[in-house]
Length: 440
Image 1: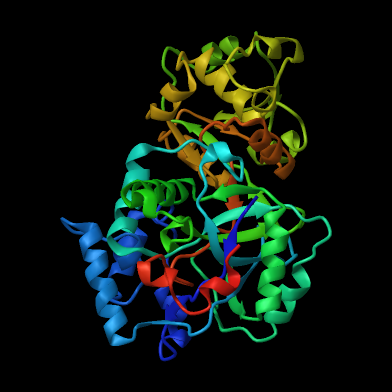
Image 2: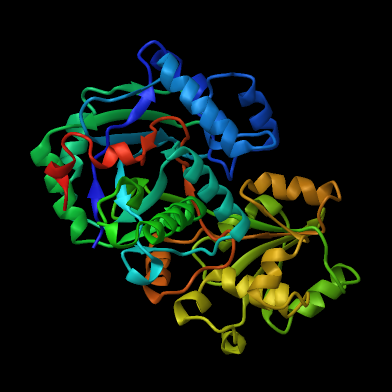
């Protein structure tokens, strides 16, 4: 199943590790334009490698990388290791501090149809090509994607905890309020044990589908060019991934609400409610801030906010679910978000088909519940549909069904950060010392 390898990680040099908070960055697909401009002001921030700019962004990243290597800004560890990565965080309204435990290593970039790494989201070709070009020019990975393996016995956690007794460095607080801590395991016997555990398991890709597909596209291109000389052990076969245990209760998935900027064909509130009525029961509420609690744990239930005094809980009538005729698996059809996209976006608003909905500019995906209410009140949106989070069990069922979820179904929190650890897939890594020791 999953083939993992330790890496000789690249990290900011000792003189910069105390400034790590100023050097890390959000992932390329979540960093806002405002954040980018602020981070670009620091000439050593990792954003220059992960989201380069200019007429030739990938070329700019390569030039910056070579400059940093020569100046010692980035330095490579002498020994290969598995890098332990803990993220401490809190959720709004909860006094509990969570700790998501995991580790970063290289994983072989296998095709989806090999059923080793499983996806749950579709990707956009332009974003995949952008990541593949950056990788092809630099042979360098500035952030880890997030993968999930399931181990109900928690076999690896004691090794992770032991490594964390001697951290390499940590952030005080990253852009999302989490504290990130990095350590390393370089014991060869322990690393081989990690390899054996993962070799018996599939990996679900939680976050980073575009970066993973970029690695996969680059691997396929290099393999085709290598022809008969291909061995499967070349460094460019591998991809930097952060692996966490799906059985842990510190794995959090937050809801992503749907903000409708437009209601095509709908005359007003009364018209919308009348269009929803054949599919949903509609209950009028008084306080919009009650919506998350009123729908919590209820299948196919949503909050609907249309402005001051227009607050509703809607829930699909069970008998109409059989009308959902999208060509997908039952596991996907049973998802709340599939119900919302089919019966609201397609049947009520006329945006037919998942691909048309992905391209439709009339929907925004918002994680912050109060922001949804505010934007409707300001007239920036006409309706907010408040959703429940997707469960880990649902993610696993969909992945094993071979299907994908509607767009923006999951938001694993917190996100990994860029610049905490880098890895190289250059040719020299294939024949680096110790490589054969860990070859599967």
